[in-house]
Figure 1 (cartoon, one colour):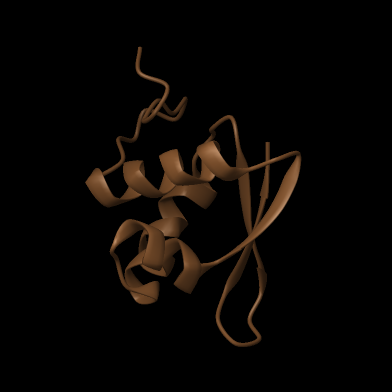
Figure 2 (cartoon, one colour; figure 1 turned 120 degrees about the vertical axis):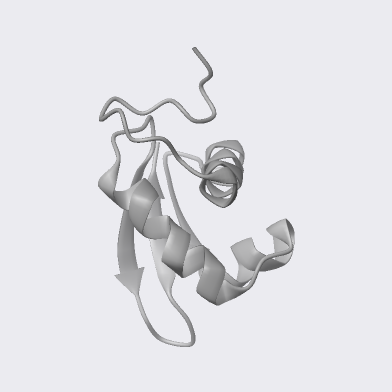
Length: 81
């Protein structure tokens, strides 16, 4: 089983969602905060694309937990390993 897109709920992630999840896994410590626009810059996406695709990651069951955390000057995501 691939750890980049494996989810226990059985729903598969699309390519953008897998890229975002891989980025989060590679860059999270115990608890890290990420801005959508900074993830977007790293992955050559728009902040809007990151936000739209982050919902599937938030709703899934992965080895990282993602919660929408703040909205000032762009959406911030709290990611916990």
